[in-house]
Image (cartoon, protein in one colour):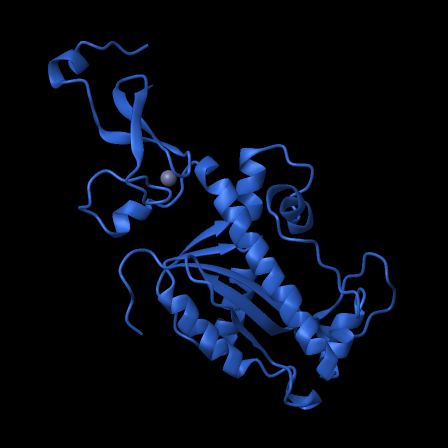
Length: 264
Ligand SMILES: [Zn+2]
């Protein structure tokens, strides 16, 4: 698949099906590997390209109970999708989604998809602010306009139990829930973006268009003061679109003046 110019930014969220196995008790169990009868699998993924409205969604449902655990076709399409992406946005994606997906790819013998940079909205929210909770439920409530969703028809674990039975009614619910989280995660990312310190430099994906905001590629930037370090001084700018701050790479102090600066 040919890559389009500029960074392709994909927001992604997966749902997995649980392990099945034996256990002797319910508290602080140390479950042996031979007590696992069925390994976890991927149930579904939802994704969205930034700047495009379309929903990308796939699940393992609708093919009968015996196929619910078969995520092979889903993995193939997910691999293509990740291969197209430059940057992936995911809530807890660094710890969960991407690593879980990679585990399935490894087990199924896939070669790596082209390298991606992962922006984890959970980590970024935590880094930027003392938020009450880093769970998507809290973050989307306070930082986005996406309404809260509950599995009303299938509360708690019932959703997964019914998915395992390939109950046709559960499919719409999984899809709704999965897609809602992607929409919330993308909105959360856009809200956090100007605050993110080392955001991938989006302008560097298409260089040569004049100075542009590294966080959102906007040309609407205003030079505002200087960023001063121990040894140097750089022109600073603020983006009037996203509000993010950045600075020039080249110092404004010429060589002789710089050599006169003392260290302490
Ligand atoms: Zn910007």
